[in-house]
Amino acid sequence: MTRQTILRVVAKLLIPYILLFALYVQFHGDYGPGGGFQAGVIFAAAFILYALVFGLGSARRVARPGVIEVLVALGVLIYAGTGIVAMLGGGNFLDYNALDHHNPVHGQHLGILLVELGVGITVAATMIAIFFSFAGRRVQR
Image 1 (cartoon, rainbow, N blue to C red):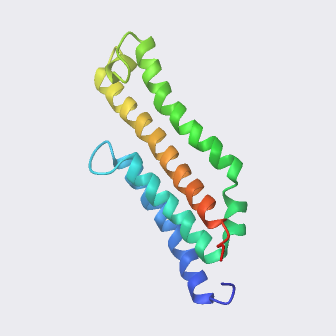
Image 2: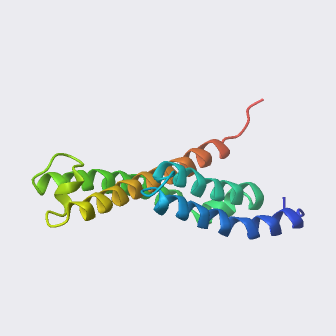
């Protein structure tokens, strides 16, 4: 794939916009369609495009497998941690009103933002990990 100059240049131009769109979907998800799952898939698609164009070794240097594993766990911890903080605040698990007793609307916004962030991180890291595990296999004949 090293001789595909046009493909490499187009990928270098597209990947930042794909990542930017993923961030837009992530942080616009509490106001409209979108959210963590969709943003995670779009974010992972940018890394998968990078791996397909520039090679698996290059992609593993950009997104190290150890970091990917940590991100999977971090996203779950953000999600669960939001629920636990709500419980410690006197509410039920993922009761966002308990996140800010003075302004429940702010608590709702903060809770949705944190939960969607956790979901987005976990989904993106899981998709990248799945791609790395399947792409690294050798075909047996």
